[in-house]
Length: 88
Image 1 (cartoon, rainbow, N blue to C red):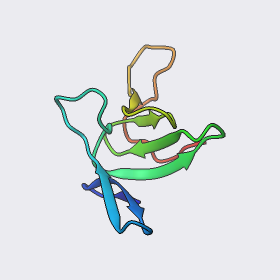
Image 2 (image 1 turned 90 degrees about the vertical axis):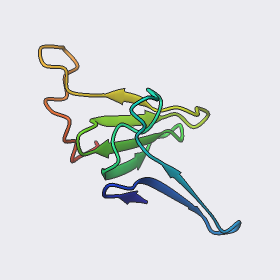
Image 3 (image 1 turned 90 degrees about the horizontal axis):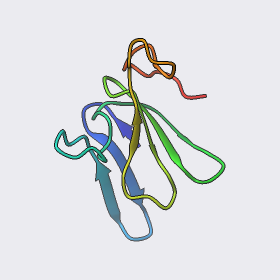
């Protein structure tokens, strides 16, 4: 579940547990921003998260940290802005 200003939440119904991922400015592997716009899974089970202000974050199925793609004006892989509304 993506939440506005609350990060990313995962509900494990069987165990009755909620896990939350949030942005921590002191942790480069944390979620890119706390406002989540879109969530998608890739064929390998990786999680892609489009955020407001933090670009796009990706967490592979076996990873514990997120990797980020953010606005980098002039770079070949620039997102064009950190307001990521869509994942394709």
